[in-house]
Amino acid sequence: MTKKGFDPLDISKVKTYSLTERESKISTADVCTPPKGGMTLKDYFNGLPNILAAKDIKDLISAITVAVNENKTIILAMGAHVIKVGLGPLIVDLIERGIVSLVAMNGAGIIHDFEMAYIGTTSEDVDSVIGGGEFGMAEETSRMLNGAINDGAKLGCGLGEAVGKMIEDEDLPHKKMSITASGKRAGVPVTVHVAVGTDIIHMHPGASGEAIGKTSMQDFMTFAAAVATLKDGVYLNIGSAVLLPEVFLKGLTLARNLGHQVDDFTAVNMDFIRHYRPETNVVRRPTSKSGKGISLVGHHEIMLPLIFGGVIDALEAVGAAGN
Image 1: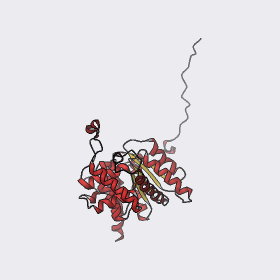
Image 2: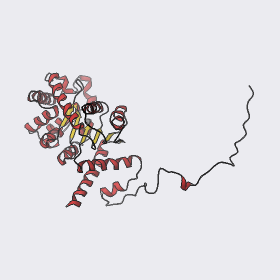
Image 3: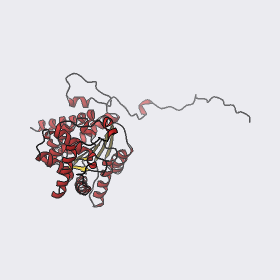
Image 4: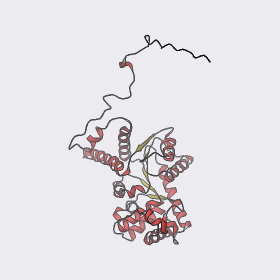
């Protein structure tokens, strides 16, 4: 086979245009303002660049602030890791301030919520006990949570309400740190969505599949009712990679199937890595025709206080301006 020869291209006639005529993605209006000592939180956020995740954070703070001021629905769905990294008091504060309309969690959430309220510590060292079959065998956790769920089923309560009621009724030492108890006190629903067999309390004789199913199903209906009012609101999925994104998609489908106009809302996923399911079922699919999807990557213990610090600062600034 004969090799072909290639003469260099003649670039003397390359067509150009003026830089001033070109569309560019970044301008001087988008760059950051370097931080200064003593600056306010508002100044800090205003100084962030209007680019990529920094712009998304500012857009999210604005969306939540507007939703609160206009009395729109804000749902915070969270994995149990949010409690394990010390953010229970933040979620309680959001409930007490009336910023969130509903908090949804998985079954592990009530375990850490209860243990923090009961003894002020949580998060078992699984590696050290799994070999001897001791993992998840704390007596008080299983007895009191299963008892609360069983009682709640008899009373017609949802699972989250049942746990919050038990923590309140038992006057647990650290009940002010409990998300479920805070929801019970404030009248803000805390719904719990359980996959049977995933939680340590399911390994104990007091566990009733009937009671777990009944109370968690009731919580799903409450959750779906809140999703039905999500128009112009905000939905946040914080740290749940599978269960709560699936629950959200089904709740949203049910609401739309029944004729509720659930659109133009902001849907947010935040975790320290990106997962397929929340990216698809929270950020992309629900907002494909309207609204805005935001995906943020970062550690909960840094990102959540930062974002809601900006929200609270903005809300208090509006309140001060109105006085």
